[in-house]
Image (cartoon, rainbow, N blue to C red; front, side):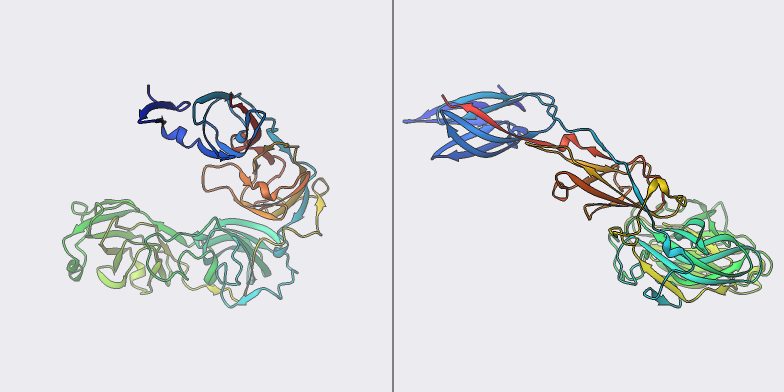
Length: 501
């Protein structure tokens, strides 16, 4: 008779004057088997998820057991004494944990005050060019930047600055636009005169840099960083996507220069594809950059990552070499005559292990001469989520939409005598942000994993009244959020009595 997930199989044989009993069971039941002792007597209990305190009283073994709060079927339990096995069971149970706790009576606090023209920025980090998030020793995923603009005439303008994460621009305290900071430029309408520019920046985590060797201070920076430029017109950055490739035989083929472009030799190539079949090899990559508008004085070719080493040719002439993957670099074309015509851009890529090719986007930037935006200020962090002052009843506020906001309220836990309830915060309807319960940070949402709620550790909750504070970067409505039960993780502590006779 084979062992099952519910019951072991007992084998008995004699050896001289001794009787030997062997229990055979599968791995599942092994995890629910406990060898315990009390008053000099040993017992084996199988089938319980957890066994705590033991006592013997009136011929019964009293076992403090922990079982799942929700148990769809009864548990078959065996107690083995030195002479026999005693079967008993624990009935199925549904638990008494409410499925949800409603959250109402919210209070609101504006989290975009750092965009106001008159904000006190005396304690902010000051620098000529914007510095990446963390430069002020704040390690949160949110930051504010400020600078001044002097616009000479009404029109469409493009601000260019390197970045990582998400950004939202405010002009004179008013929301102007949202953009992906990795795009490195933002085009907005501006009126003539002096303006205050504020930028809210946030990100969802940093690259773990697996298999990367090299300096990390300038890899996967977040926020804004580097030179900032502004120019009327734009946008000026576009992606190069019509690539071709052909394999090379050896490393030293690069000295001969790129082979003439011919579609019978070169094949279509999609950014991110591996052309080396996970092996060491060499290849040429080609694209023709369209002719730029008259008056273009400079064209920057922006490489985000090539794998692994690249030699760059412009119209067949070598102009640059770069070693290493996952490291951005750029090549500038400034020759006036070259810029009057389409440009042949060719890469010779050396791959020494695993995948190889152009593994991230290649873009061109035609902004050329532009006005520098200098004298930046930086302040990291979302603000004081635990501040006592500054809160207003949500229904009494005319909330500015799509800007960062704080929300807070209180909730009461239901009685859980004899049970351990597990609770989670469900950020339904919110965008990106963080949650605190009783001053403890639960983390950021949305989760990278497919999880729709944030676990609240039991030790951070209090009997009775608890406080929750939410910081939503997008200023979305808080009204759909709630506290939800994770019944499958809940536990019930109960005493089980087993007759020993």
